[in-house]
Image (cartoon, rainbow, N blue to C red; front, side):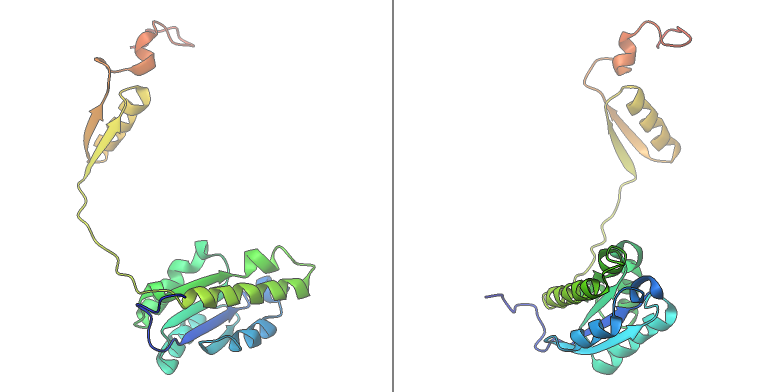
Length: 203
């Protein structure tokens, strides 16, 4: 049985379904996905938007967090690669820990890959939303640690690449430590007496 440690007494999950213009709504029946999300345990509110990543869509999320006292947010839209930071910042602005947010990709994983299979794409989107809600139940607030950074770099290998990397880092204002296991620098280049095409000395 799963542990309830760290979970709030009452989960209040908000699900936000994005149409992404016709990128999602052109293939997926977003109304059906929204209605399905309403039937899931612990889901308090479901909101459907034309563009959830736009300011009006983000304002809907913030409004719902305040109005329904949400403690988890699931956004069903596009790839997290593009807008996960957007939505994390959005829920943080509303006073929620940004790690209590879960994103579901129903654009790349459903509408874009099943453009001629509307019914199947819609059912897949429902499955992904259900999975996202299930994951959201077990999210815990996180605090990002801040640690001091020493502006120094270690370059291992004193061949041509290592030497160039060390020079570039030094030019960028970093203290550089160059480590080479041999007694001399140059690596393989140091063993060559001529280099193509000029046939100059390699060192």
